[in-house]
Structures are given as C-alpha cells and as structure tokens.
Amino acid sequence: MRLLIVGSLNGQMGVAAKIAIERGAKVTQVGDIDAALTALRSGRSAELIMADVALDIGHLITCLRSERIHVPVVACGIGNDAGAAVRAIKAGAKEYVPLPPEPDLIAAVLAAVTEETHSIVHRDPGMTATLRLADQVAASDATILIAGESGTGKELMARYLHRKSRRSAKTMVSLNCAAIPDNLLESELFGHEKGSFTGAVARRIGKFEEANGGTLLLDEISEMDLRLQAKLLRAVQEREIDRVGGTTPIKVDIRLIATTNRDLEEEVAKGRFREDLYFRLNVVTLKVPPLRERPLDIEILAGYFVQKYSESNGVPTRPLEPASIDMLKRHTWRGNVRELENTMHRAVLLANGSDSISPASIVLSGGAPTASATPPASAARPGVPGDRAPMVGRTVAHVERDLILDTLQHCLGNRTHAANILGISIRTLRNKLKQYSEEGLSVTAPAGEIRPAAL
Image (cartoon, rainbow, N blue to C red; front, side, top):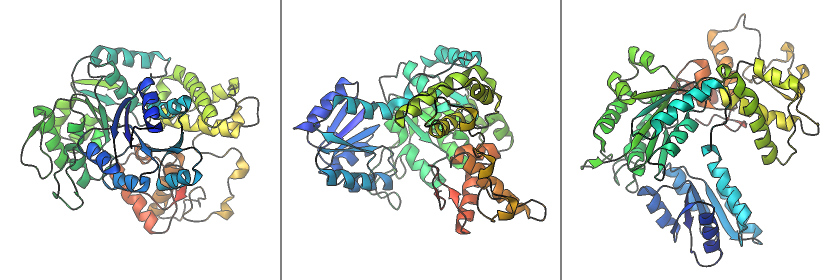
C-alpha cells in the first residue's frame, strides 16, 4: 500500500515510518500540510495519510474534502496527549495512533486500509470459471470490462486483475463514476489547471495522470454522461488527455478496467451509451455471477464475514447453526455479497451472548428480528420508512416514495445498490431523495444513520 507521512521523520514518526516499510508499505514523506496537498495534486497518490497531530489536522481534512481527494487520515502523537487525540478525531481523522508506535498497531491500521484488496473468497465452480478467465487475461494490457449486478464484487475483481498484471508494482487508481456529479467528473478524470473554473485553487492532476504506468478503474461507467463519454473515447483510443483549462495534450500509459451493473448493449440500443466507446471497452468481458447463482459461495462467505465482524466488534466467533446456513442458501440475495455481508454483521451483533448464530439472529431483506417489531397498520405514520399505510386510496407518487425509501433502508443507505434494485439510474434516485429531503422526510444515510439526505 502507498503511505504518505506528513511531518518530520526525526523521532517517533520516523520509527512509525520504518515499521510501515517493514510491513510492506511504500512510504513517501513530506514536512507539512501544504507539501502534502501539493504532492497529492501532482499525482503522488496515497491510500493512507499518517499526520503528526501537532499539525492542523482539521485544515488538512477540510482541504482534502474541498478538493475531492479521498484518502483516510490517521493522526499520530504522544500517547498521553488525550486532548490532541480528541481534537484530531473530531476534525475527521479515522484513527489516532499513540507514539512511540506499537508495531502490531501500525500493522493493524495498514491491514484495515488494504483488507479489501486481498484474495477473493470463493468455492463455487461459477466463480472459479470467472477467475480462471481473469488469470488468462490479467498479464496483458487489454482493456477489461467487468459486468455484474451491484454487490457481486466487481471492484474486488478489478483489484485481483491488477495484482496479477505486469503493472502490479505500479499504482491502481479507481474512480466511481456514479458518485461524482457530471460537472465535476471531467476534472476528476483529466485534471485541471489553476483558475480553470470556480474552486480550481491550484493545478490538479486527474485520475488518468495519477494512474500513469499503472491501472485505472472506472467503476459504474454506465452512469457517465454522454458528453463526457466522447472525451473518454479519445483518451482510450489515443492514450492522450487534456486537462480542463489546459492547452497541451498529455500522453498517458495506463491499463483500463471498467465495471458496469447494466447491460451495455441495451444501454447502447436506448441511446444512453456510445456504441464506439462500448466496443473500445469490450475487448474482454468478465461476468461476475450473482450470489444466487453461486450457492456454494454462500456458506463460505457467511463464515468469512462472521469471523471478520466478530473480530472487529471484539466478540467470540460463533458458528452458524445448520438451520441458519439453510436459511441463507434459500434467500434470493438481491444485493448479492454486499447484502450477505451486512446480514452477517447484524447477525454477529444480534447473537451476542449466544453460543451460536441461530435463524433468530439473522434478519433477511431488511426485516425485523421479530414480528412484534413491526407497528400495526393503525399506527402508520405517512412519510416514515417502515410505517406504511395500505396502498388503496393512495397516489402513485406516494407509493413510489415509500418503495424508494424502503429499498434504500434495506440497502443500509447504499445509493448505487438501491438504484440497481429499483431499476432506475443513480441520478434519478438522487433527485428523488433530494425531493423527499426537502419535503422534510427522513432518508437513510449510507452508514445506516437516519438523517436528511446526503446526496
């Protein structure tokens, strides 16, 4: 993993850097926050920042957010300075690592960041066949299109391809095309020059340049606007990009991987995706099967997630009862592996105090553990997810609203997953949620917290 240390390497920060290097991290160091921002803007990407708590952590995180640079920050400081630790966490730091550093703690922080890039857990022949094809094409520089339903593990498959490629020692950069507004996506892809638009406070290197020599993953590429698809086509064909506001074309050397949860041939037929771009992307297509078509993976993945969340919540790892495994295998898993992961996380928490995980601890499809948890129809309150009046006599708009809010709640706030289940675009979903929020309704946030919509 790529680690950026912000602060002097004299003293204990230097010791922390040495430990990180010994644990396999590629470490870069800068002296202060301005130097860190300059490094990140110039394409020296990082997967984690460890910053001296004596620096202005709040200013660093504010700058990262305003410039849409997504990298977690861990603050480091003398262990007995509790006030500094509290201020850093309140400012937005993900963790506080006390100094002098403990090697096991540094290793745990690095592992938490890189955990999702490890090998793919599977047993089913359907997934084995997909991985066999991935192994055949990974070493090439061919563009790969990974297709599959939301939650099947397409990004994990992309990282698997990168690790198996000749570019594995170089950077892999990913961009979720569905998560960034259209008017900002061009800058994220190609970068911009200082002053090229309001808010462009400095030159910023885009994802194409950041991934130079390595791999660029464009996640959910089907959500990209048609106008921008034309510019992407040129970049894919010529391996040449123009920064927003720039005057000189820039050559890039990348291996491109794209993912989609939609049928791109159908999107092309409907005029929502460029046919020429589709043919450029579709050199090799890997189809990740949905979980319902991988029955042998359900049990092994469930056990994996039970162990993972037992350890992260500090509780004993409890076995799944045979009836629980049977229950999981009979479920349809519309949300695929992501839904299974969330289900097992809940089961670990609900089974706390038991000797095993029974069917009573497993909540499927966003349902309640017991029937008594569902309020009677007479107690229904319009506009509150989970409290629904009968449909007869209601408008289509109100029924649609309840369906959207219930689906989002079922997906624990994941917008992309909910849009896939509903069969609508992520843009349509965001517009609906914005409308509901303005009407004063509660919208499930991504972390499961109920608050006004964060769109």
